[in-house]
Image (cartoon, rainbow, N blue to C red; front, side, top):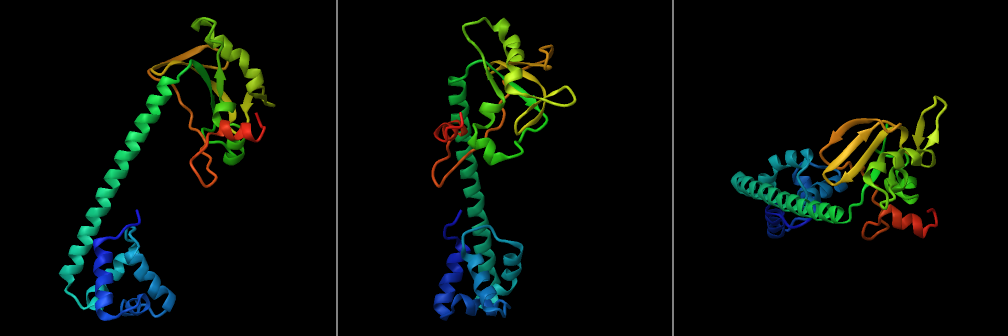
Amino acid sequence: MTRPTPLADLIRSRMQDLGLTDEALGRRLGYTNPAKAAGRVHALCNGLPLSAKSRFALWSLPEALEISPALVLQAVADTEQLFAECEREAEAERRLAQEAEDAAWRASFRPHAVIQTENTVPTQICICGFTGGAGRWLIISFDLTRPPLTYVQQAVDALPKKTMACSDGGRAVMFFGKALGLIINHSPDAALRCDLKGNPLEVLGRAYRPGEVRLSFGGPPLSPTAVSRVLGLQ
């Protein structure tokens, strides 16, 4: 958040009344270096949560602005309340965005498998994103014309193409390390965890969704799938 705050309004108003520049006020706060003096005043007024150094500077602010400590304390309290309100608004926006994303995911859901690996975060995030992200490397699509009873076998049959052989006899996935097992996502609310041979291990109450890389080139985020297609990497 970068917006005017009650504390910033108070400081700027008194600076105008007293004819003080940022550097001059910073010197009153105890800073002898011109850049640091001006920088501390900017930090107090930039609309961001107060750092430890800015909070320490508040002790000298009433005398520097030639006002009572009560006015500064009230401005700080009002500013903290503003920050809290902004955080609540941001949290509500994040929640609504997540709910919309979940609804879209449910609407577009198709049964598939996910390869479980030792790393949930790719070792080379950017390159992984450019080459298709988790969707390319971890997701196994099913032939949905075949019955659900075949999903486990379809996932097992796809492993040789989706993974690489390791010297210890196991399998590994590019960017994600050793393959540990499979999760068969039958629906958004039903999944089955299996070993790499397809032996069932655990029934899950919801589908497993691996994290995905987000790519941005100065604009809205782009999906790794879209970027990799543009680059001709899929």
